[in-house]
Image (tube, rainbow, N blue to C red; front, top):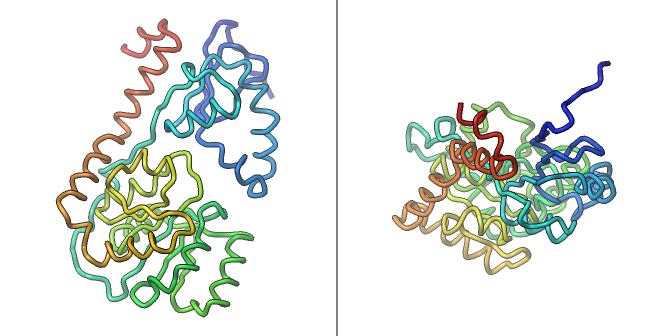
Length: 290
């Protein structure tokens, strides 16, 4: 295997948290610090973020991240200078995700949870709140696997919810989009996130979002979602009451969703990335504007 040889002064940019040991002129991307909050979920990643990443950061010229929330996390956790952390947000492709072609009601209304592979996605809290939704909806949980799914399946059985909860394996884009388009709402009660793309995809499909009241969801979703406090049954009851009342069709909620979707596009992300790269290395201007 050939080694990678770079000019000594070349700027190296990584879209992940992996970098080149000992190299000074580099940028890495830290999407979130979830593994530090939930170390048992992915032990090797926890060990890297705990012991390897601090050493790597000492050799980084800058860090890119996806939200102000993670920017604050990186600065506070590692003491990395805040003025060298640049936010380059994620986005949603509205040519890929959009409302369903028809508005026919589903025979069985359902709530959707997406990407619920790890415990911080908090499916178990949704199950604990089943008395607030199970008379009206089925819950569909996608991309849930491993030990967490096994634990959830046991809880579903113990709570007598076998007819009300469906676990779905990994889906094609077309299948996922159809689930978004036809759900009553996306439920996204994560205990922590670095950004959270599924709520944007749901908003692009024209469906309501119920999200946990955590910093990054407030940052990204603004007034476009119904927020629930973790463990707060009253806030869950209010969210489902808003859903039943048709709040998604209110002009204010539609305008809020449009503001969010207009702000978080991949074109905007590309432009912000370009500005961030130029802020770190102005000599790139000719290459980036060519």
